[in-house]
Image (tube, helix red, strand yellow):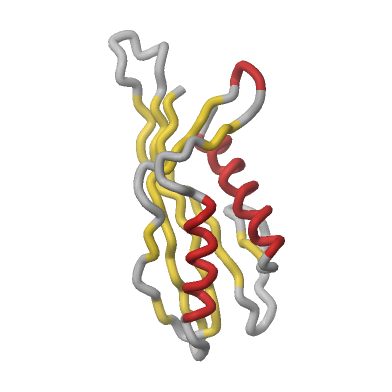
Length: 140
């Protein structure tokens, strides 16, 4: 178990949803070149803490971090479309709703432990980015 397993599960959830929109998603360490004037989403997992809360340290591991998705649109467009996508993303990760990762005896659950938050948009030279994030936790 690692943050990578959590990343893979979150990316699977987002990929399934994005196919229905449809919108492309840029995943970490995967080549991605946006097409001119294309809207897209950037997926990033930021592991923050790996620790044990037991005396032995061998029978429990807590994984915690932040998952962020950023909706990227052209700067001269209305932010309404980005906000609509953000609302769709919020429904994917309800707070405290366990998400099963893996199968069999090595499976575990990870849960969002903060509400999915839409942050302030970031204007750029030609793109506008709307960050959406939440904190997650898994106890294994």
